[in-house]
Image (cartoon, rainbow, N blue to C red; front, top):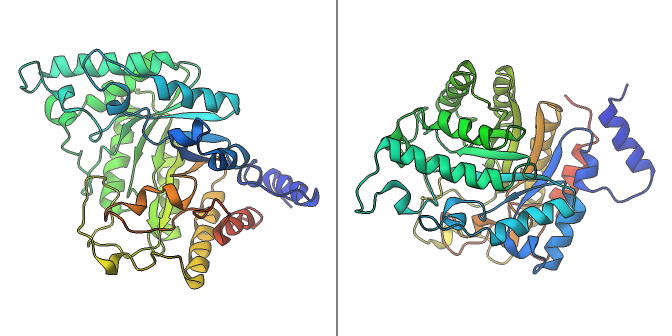
Length: 368
């Protein structure tokens, strides 16, 4: 017997209409994309149209990060952030705020006094509280979910040695959630990170979430970034990670999905934006287009991923691609500048790739 989700899919197919991503998974989870200013202001009209047609949730690539919103003490610039939120509301989308507290893209002044010396714990907590209350308060009732803390666990499972940790201590995470909840009591609040499929980091993240829950901190869910490649992590690792956070009472979001097809340049897979690797032609093997064989491997990989997500309908509540088309993907320039990657469902001309069809078809498959 088909589930409600399966019945919806069959009905859509029977109607003869061209399925979109949001329709294909409409009974299971939201499907979204991270968007840039050219897209949500309509300057890139082709990609604006893709977003409007395919997705029912959006995340901002950069316009809600501290350096964009709050570049100097006492100075906020909400121009682009307001347009991002307006775009989401006009298109009846679930709007994500990304992000409030991160170790990257934070101006140096945030951690210093007017003499350039490190702030005290009390002063940095005050600065954090003021920023969160100003930003979350401005979009209260408009932004439905916030990445409150981003990438706070290191690869060995310990807390990352960020400026927040060094000055405030480990309870900065708890404080950030408390400030965000006070600013908008109805907003969903998330912890977001990468490589949580790796055992040491996952165990550290699970311990962190369990501790927050035990203290009564309002945390709604966990975001798995899933910046993955063609071979790893395995589907079973992804599923077991989803299940473990689910057992803690967390909803799980796939928040920054893309599949890199290029050779990885270091021993350890990471999504740390600070990583930089020298240019090497061997690391950019497909500057003029992706071979058909790799197009098919990419499609098969996306099938595996979406079957894993679909197996957890209800526990997984959102799947968001980090970008719309290959031309704008951050992986084109990271961690090696100038190389050409093909990690998304739409090509550089804005046309759907075989991977797009694979994701649509994965919605029709019976959960394993």
